[in-house]
Length: 509
Ligand code: ATP
Ligand code: MG
Image 1 (cartoon, helix red, strand yellow):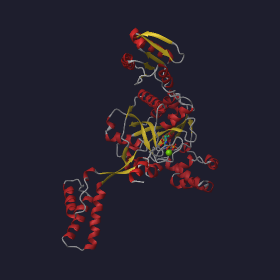
Image 2 (cartoon, rainbow, N blue to C red):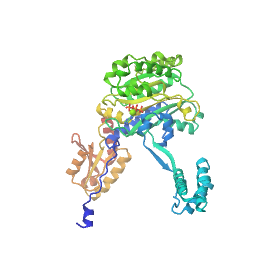
Image 3 (cartoon, protein in one colour):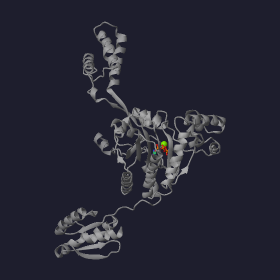
């Protein structure tokens, strides 16, 4: 076989979406849009404004806020090195002289920062190499020095370590600080929606690119009414979407004063029953005892039920705050279930924590997680700030809506224009323009079709009406409108058409 023939037979690679990512397609995207539109409406009814942070940030931001010990940061982030564009283009490494000149020049201009690494690179390393080239030092150690010089330069060329965001609270706090939002009327109420990235094992309701809709309230006050209003807002959102089987679990996990004491007590109690626990929980006794309470392992449930409960160990302020949050929820008619085992493993979370589950999701049934994080903005170098927020898993929310049949049926066309003949085509184009301007969804076939075929096509697309335009219709000025559901036909003069369609749409919706 000739080379040319072999090439011809080689099939081009078929690409597939990366594992854990997927295409959202019509008609499902109509549901996504409805969910997002409802979020825009409900959240703005509560005085929240939308923030759209970037989808990648310095890795350090997530390490510091989410916590470098968490699974999210230690295992699940998509992290990469961003090259520093300033040190491009690559110096000519082949010629030592040219390379050295370039290093020196970049140092002088400040593009190689005049800090410790810069000093090391130019003052020490470069001088040594210079000595070598002048014959003032020996060849063997010289090779190492040249290598080190090049490596240092390469290290500088590599810019910051960045990550695709695994969540957005950190970004919102970063933005609050960066834009001095503490100077705005407090509290600042922001919401966001968009993709998040975590390298998790993909399964139903768990993806590597998934979507969250979330909100944060940042400011000087930690009034319990803020917690309650944020929760009321998510519940109203779910209610508006008619999400089924919604359950709100509530807990308080105390503060920097009382939680460490409780954690120690818990650890001591867990050590007493260590042998009866599984390997994961055994490990968590040391690393994060609170997470043991999260365990779904059947064999551990009996033991966990006997452990001390944080509600009994809250300090006075936290206990009062928790009681007031519950009272505020009751005033708003929000139904909750206290769940003393609901914890969030991250250090910055404090006091109010909540989780919302919905039906039809199997074991991935959490559609929303939230809580208070008063120390976070300060941890990121901002002013002392109180904060509370939540994140809804939009993929799971959609799944639940679909499972319970709350997803709207595919939006069909309002009108399919069946036309035949040159003159009818011109009229059809004009009619399509007018109808679309008036807000109707119109399908205008690009080529002529026999009326029978066109009506079949209209049916397949779920069109409500077919507008039939042939030579007779055009010359008579009377258009035929067929209602596909019952096959009834009507002859209308052109000006009456839009009014008639408006009326029939109002009746059907
Ligand atoms: P889970 O325990 O289900 O892993 P989580 O505690 O990691 O959730 P959060 O970080 O609190 O989740 O995020 C809030 C919401 O985002 C979750 O309740 C869930 O609905 C959704 N979510 C989290 N991770 C994923 C994922 N990999 N795929 C789809 N949705 C997710
Ligand atoms: Mg998770």
